[in-house]
Length: 112
Length: 114
Image 1: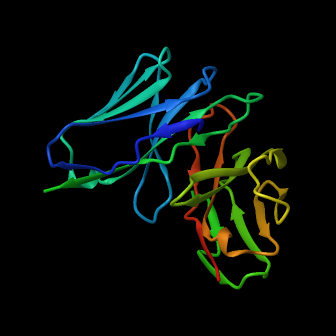
Image 2: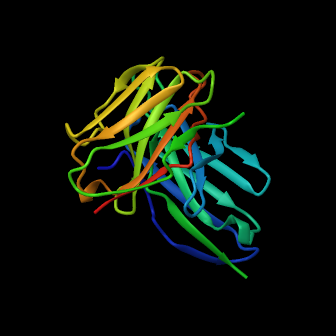
């Protein structure tokens, strides 16, 4: 079983739609969770962290469900510029050092 | 802030040749990571360093791969001999030790082994 699993998509949605991605992780001791965004032929960049209480940043909402070991990302009012691959990232905490494990990504395509 | 700098941006080589990828992390960052990305396997962590010391190299595919960090501002990833299946985008990233939140990635090296 992979440490971090995501639906690869693609999710094809019209502008203005609401879309949600889920991601599951295998290590129940994991402490830190993030969503990164990667544009085509570019490097990944941090989109947002995922806190136990959930967090919101504009049109983006991230949530964590520890009992079921998954995190989610909700995008409201999708824009064309949201088209990208969204990477779920987990820090399984090994010796307290940074060790971020990336999921394979979910591709989102927003069309007019 | 110049960001993480990788070189070369593109590398095309023939099977059996030695390949060296270079990375300059952001000044003041204590951790450095090498990732490889392919369509089939996504982003794979190869190795990471903390304070120039290799902490975990369990992701390094085989003995053909080696990585060094002789000082806080420079790291190399070497493949010798290279094989076609090594073709991928290789990313270097750096971060501060605490909190373990944000990785800053370089632009990557697109490696093609013919």
